[in-house]
Length: 343
Image 1 (cartoon, rainbow, N blue to C red):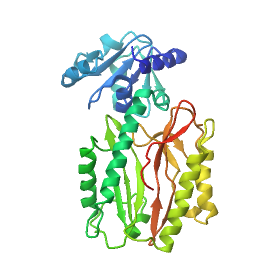
Image 2: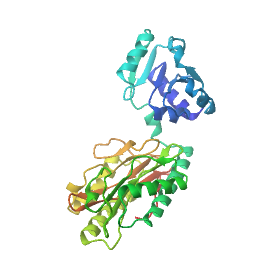
Image 3: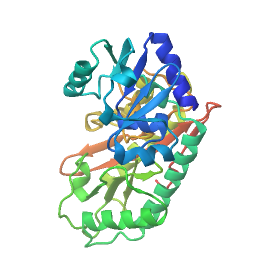
Image 4: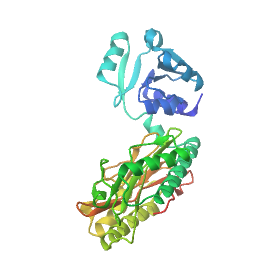
């Protein structure tokens, strides 16, 4: 049996649950390798089974997970269980009502973060994939930089980046990239428009790719000419905030303290009001997952974690800069920057 399932089963025994019904598709993927539009995983202290329909029986066989045909109902599978946990952030009220109606003897217990807490610490297999994904992302962005020229639209650059990334082995984008020009770089979550790059405008690209289910997230700023004094100033401040935060990472440190390292650099330069988001977030199967590098985060840094460092300064009608890297705290407590692309 795989280690991930075993680690979850230990949690079930500790919480005295007869089973956990895993419905979050990312958690199902993490535990079983199954990827599909319909699949939940029932995990008991001794075994596990995928609940799905006939469309995915072959898929289940390929990933070697036992499965149950949901068209046959749930009584034969779960009718004798006493206390079944469910993922309260994922299961809908309608779904829970349906289970309760068929399984009247089962007591349902809401749970939170049981699988996500396991996903916080990446194993060797995950790290191998994530490192390769970051290598692809870096190569792709470096190649795209050579193609940036006046007259291109945001959409032109997006499609060019997708073609390059696919060529290097990416499965696709992990999220719609944010590509902005000139003053629009101050729009933190810019929505794609019909802007075309003007001569001399700076370009901000926040993008990520998917590789074997795992994602990257990275932001770079490109200049067509020597930056203006304003552009150079905020770029230098953000770069310092990024580098000092990465240099300060150590096992046992609170993520709230790490957030303040980056924030402190920007505040000291007089731009604190223009850094409006958290310093970073975990990455893995999802673009944004725990841990959170934020003011109110209670989590501490542990070996095996992968997360971003992404300070920024955004001034409306003038422009903005964000520099985002992915970092990995290895088993020895050493920090590895996974996105070693040009900054």
